[in-house]
Length: 492
Ligand code: SF4
Image (cartoon, rainbow, N blue to C red; front, side, top):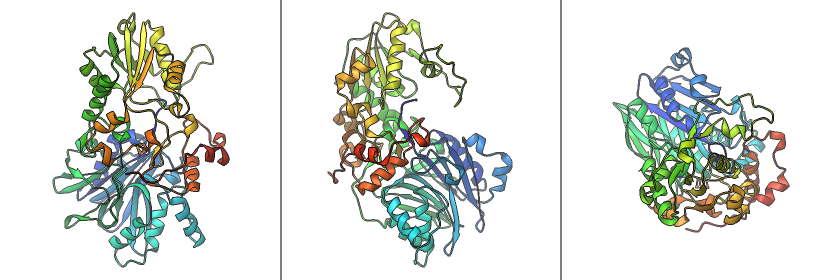
């Protein structure tokens, strides 16, 4: 909730519905947790592509008049939290262009690991970039493709990028979903009457009454057009590397992601955590909202009752007037408040899904102690986070990850907990289907399934927007290079 990895983006597309833009708006509304900095929708009436983008939340970005202007039976949308490129309107998506292949709108979830080198080459050839995003390289490659057909040009462009990408694209008469060959980020296919839907998570389908049909497979392109759904697989096969953190934290628990219920996986993580790291205790308390589902599993497997010993204020705005020094830990306190009747005199198991820097966890442990808890035992429903992500997730540099630089005992002391335990890597991979062979766990292992040039690593690391840091306060290149771990080759 405060000291967390952040998801990069959510994407949505619909083909063949008279209210395409309105339904895209609702889809983005359901995907708001995947990005809160900007939102955009592009629509097509079969000839003309129109778009609207704005900074801020979906509900602020569109009004009825704007949606009415976005006419047509095709639409795609995007919510963004920047991992590559600054937070500004020019970088909001969908990116819309017109070229010799016709109009194209693009919405991207992920990170392209070779975007820097592609961009340099394109600029040398005279390309003029309008944004500082990695995603824009794809539309330049599309526009320059010598392929004769639109689909051929799309395949040609996407074949040249590497890394994590779930794209939703729109031409004048088609909506196209693309998932990278490793399948890092999710993309689901659904049906709404005669219309077809592609989106990051199934919770977006639920809101508009669509039915989840299946996932777009890693390496698959689905073309939604007048002939229905066409599936093509133009890329070379690659080891699957679905982001396990989608299940641990990012995705909504009411979604199906990578074909599995997030709620069930998250509860399972808690059950396994209880089996691996039991403790004599009186009450299991989740850190809301992220620790709730793992807590349910932990309580169920341990037999220790779960109570809501921390209450979250859901109505905290992004800014508030903070007192100078008079209230200690005000930032945490304004969002979370302890329930003394649950905590007083109790041995508490405090459950969260992850620890990034540890600063917020430390404040919460103190808060629980100050509310009268006799013992506080920290349990984390994933392994220690030791490496940054280069595949579309906002992470701090390695030196800021507490588990990368401290032993378990040092972390326990820092948090002021009576004990601490993380879920094992085996416990994590056993909690998802084909966890050992189909999932990326790089932020827990430092072993990266898709390698990238070392200077690209520094480029991406620099591009990560460190939580709360002004651009001027970001680390220098030399410092970042020291922090980027040596990249291991694929070990699968
Ligand atoms: S490194 Fe971690 S956050 Fe990034 S894709 Fe892999 S599992 Fe997900």
